[in-house]
Image (cartoon, rainbow, N blue to C red):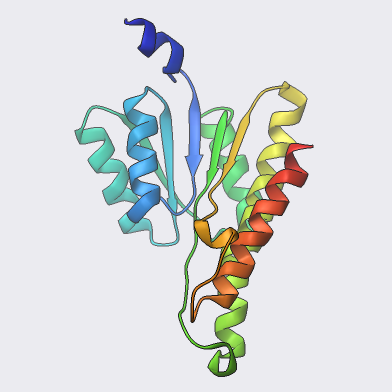
Length: 177
């Protein structure tokens, strides 16, 4: 094992990555698995989560798919409990699940606002809290919340998304202290 592999290796670690059945989350999950972590691939769609986990396993990594809705606090707690009971203690959480719906503020539908807020912000709180409750007694764990350049600026049609990412940035600071 090289010095770099020792320094950055994640052998024996368990990582939960929300929103990892596709996109950026899938790439993050693959990277963590490549570094040696056992990755729990999470998404709402069980078949997509299983396909992502299978791709990680086919590449030589360790992965388990677990579909649960990160916007439902009870489902989150049950999912975290299941991981801890069946796979082991979560060492790394990557809160990645997110979405945007582009539209001008004056035309933004209330339901779309709620969907973006719930997935992008509430999920970070729900999953972060559930995992932190397990990590704190162990005095070990890493929580990574994915923000965006939109936590610093906004573009036309992105006000709700930018609001959630700015809030995630500040929630992360609060979680850290």
